[in-house]
Length: 172
Image (cartoon, rainbow, N blue to C red; front, side, top):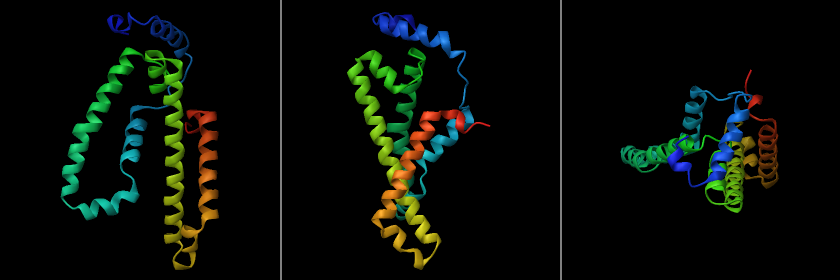
């Protein structure tokens, strides 16, 4: 850890020492290939293919602008913070240690809300795809509020179970 950058915050030094003392015991669940595939899945979502096709060649310019103005700066900031504070918990821990426990809580809460909303959107897209796959007789699936509600609750509950069990669920 860069001592010049952390010298003003003894909490960072204590957290760093605690993490380093037990991090050898923790398994490394995600490799570089896992992270690369996850980023591709986050960015390339099938529900946006139609929008991209409608945008035509302007779509390429928009992606280049997004890469330059968002993805590269985000990668630089995360890389910098990870070198400065290599702590499990990422953004939550960085905010908590740099600002306060309350700010860390707000960051964690916002991440949880964002994930919950994304999972519910996934259930909306999944039910729409199911209705399309099963044909015109299954069109009611995409328009059924109870089906959408149940699909959202099942996906959110599943994500909560996986989060509780940890990333070891996916490793063989």
